[in-house]
Every structure is written in C-alpha cells, then in structure tokens.
Amino acid sequence: MKSVLFVCTGNICRSPSADGILRHMAAQEGLDLRIDSCGTHGYHIGEAPDHRSIQVARDNGVDLSFLAARKLSAEDFENFDLLLAMDSGHLTTMQRLCPPEHTHKLRLFLENGADVPDPYYGSMNDFEHVYDLCARGCEALLKRLELTR
Image (cartoon, rainbow, N blue to C red):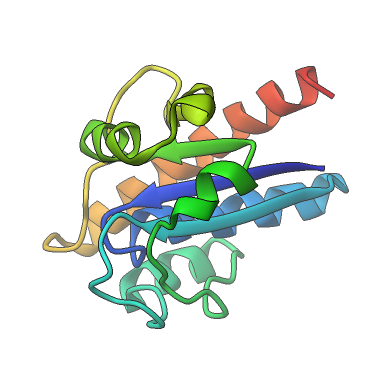
C-alpha cells in the first residue's frame, strides 16, 4: 500500500484539504492508499481544520470534519512513501529535518512547482481557490500513483 503525507504550516487549511480530497478520490476509485496530513509547526495540534476549509470541502462533497491537526514528526520520514509540501518553504523545512536516506520521498505537491497559497488570512474565494488547486493536484497525483502500481 502506498502512503502519502501532505505538509503545510499549521495543518488546518491546505494540507487537510488535500488529505480529505485524496481520501475521497481514492475511495471512489477503490484505491488502497494510506493518507495523512500534518504541519511543520504545532500551532493547532488536535484542532479540526479551519471552518472555512471544512465548508468549501463540504460544498464539494468532501468531509474534513474528522481530521485533527498534528505536527510533522521524525517518524513521518520513515513511515510515508511520499511527503508532499504545500509550498517551497515547507519543502525547505522538510529537507532540513529529513534524514538523508529519505530525502527522495520529499516533493512539492503541485507538479508545476507552484506553491499552494495560504488562505488563512484571506476570503472564502481564497479557500475556494486552494480547494480547486488541491483537487487538481490530487487528480494529477492519482494518475502518477496509478502509473507506479
């Protein structure tokens, strides 16, 4: 079984959105994936995703309400096949913390190398934009994972 970890700052907006979307898509496709998300910082440990992320996901048929924020741990580098950073700052942090034998698992989430912007201080339109980016990114990710089966 392949395993994927999405990483953002506080694990309440971007990474849980991608987490929930990929879980939803994988379930629809009958794929056996282990999916999780976390933050590079422990600001919101144990908290649910931001209510705006939950709402936008719900409007698109995806449930995020069961997710709880956690911080990236040393074990994550060993326990996941793929660790996907939501922006280049997260990737830099992950590269700094990651043991050399696992750095091949680290990547930016979006294939084109673009950052997923943080919607936290923005409007609902920003959350909708992030959801759309995550949905497109998850579709591309599923195609890549299918090719490696």
